[in-house]
Image (cartoon, rainbow, N blue to C red; front, top):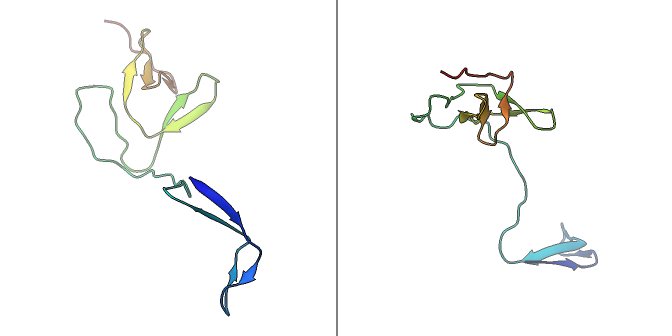
Length: 101
């Protein structure tokens, strides 16, 4: 919980001034977001469609809106039609369909 305090500008020392507004409170608050594209640890899984990217690169997926998105998450599965999709059900692009055996 934060409270915004508005003070008038005033001299606090010979070299600094009091800001015009100060947030005071308890707890934490998000100050910035950074994207981290570094490699994670390799882990052997029982899913034959799990993939890992070594170095630079992304998997391309198609969103329901038709837009293209990119991810480094290599956890894939087959949907009911045999199309390779990610955990949210978005198709890998270009689309890959595994024939039923």
